[in-house]
Image 1 (cartoon, rainbow, N blue to C red):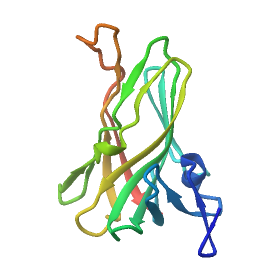
Image 2 (image 1 turned 90 degrees about the vertical axis):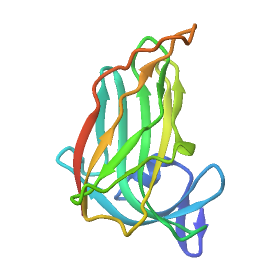
Image 3 (image 1 turned 60 degrees about the horizontal axis):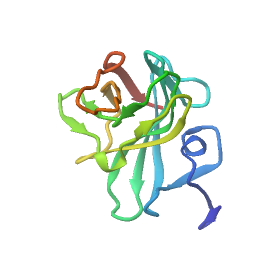
Image 4 (image 1 turned 120 degrees about the vertical axis):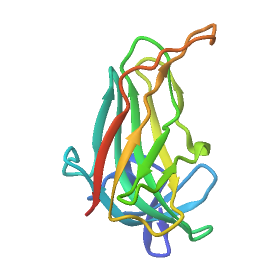
Length: 170
């Protein structure tokens, strides 16, 4: 889709792929986001994706700085997909925390939570973390673990461990 001579997508995997032509992402509420910067860490592949595992629940994502065209605010976003390789339903909020060198912290806007996925289900991920100031050059990203969903919903067990990665602007 063409938007003011720039390429727009509503696919998280297309937007997160750093070697493609997409400059803009349109979310489910029709808000548009423009890429400002890309980030990398020691596990980032040649296409800009990072893959982490919480036991057998995979999260493949790129980390981008984006600007909302709606309100001109900056965000860090994790875009990609989750893959539930377990035998049970898994719930993943995408609870993410960014910690800068000054120990400033900001957390996920839970309106963009990923939610529940069934075994073998692939779910698109678009996690927004609002930035009160300009986007940082580097930061530590902390991703909280997902949990199993039981039918009685009275108890749930987290799977895997919290993940911490250090990212720097490309």
